[in-house]
Image (tube, rainbow, N blue to C red; front, side, top):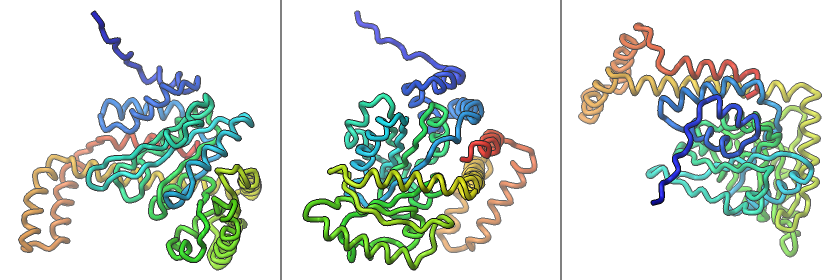
Length: 358
């Protein structure tokens, strides 16, 4: 009779040691714990993060974005395979689109990067965005931290689309690359000014064969557009590059640009300043999330909220008065009674994270 083997229940210390030893299976399970909403898992995640903080912060973090079909996954695989040959360890955090209604996710990045998936020096984590407008998983920063502790010196974060998700990715990476394709006039119209202001470089992909003349014209349009915008990084005018991930052309130039950027920014001190600013932004986001969680799960709020909503639907109560009512209920209970909820856990994580530059 076949008896299924039970999965071993790991302690926080098991995960910590496994991650430090570069165990990809335990790293993946640890990230799942971070993403979990179960209190027991959250407590274990906090213990792991606290222990692994001293081993984080040493990687080069690169954000890659662009419209679907721009060739981002092909670029990551082609460039990634080359970097692995150079001795780097690569973690790819691929942010998938999630439905606003079903919170479903495509999670197809591993199939698009099949060759890269087979490499022992690479860790690929498709992460659903959870349906939020930013398109970035809530715990991506903690995932970066764990990957760095596991020895990955290059972290690539791929996000889908061009919009608000890029704002969140920009807040957690050192270098931000926008991947575009030939078609300068039409393409330029569809790119928001705010996105162009965040980039450290633009790569016009698929610049090969019959597409090359069009790609060159597109690059000229993008370069002229960037000329009138404020650079995202001090003393760094974003270059517009030509390349073809499929034909493996121009990627060596792209990588050298990234290395030059890293060298310059570390020398002038902007690298550390950006990391410090990102830590403060993480703190503020975590604080808001935690306050929201404590607020909506508070017994008095849960009891009062349905009635408030019904009253608002009848237009017999101003929204401002409804908000004031709920805040009075909340602060007369939790804040004054000294409830700690999960604030201590998040506070500990964010405070310590300043040492890692996250």
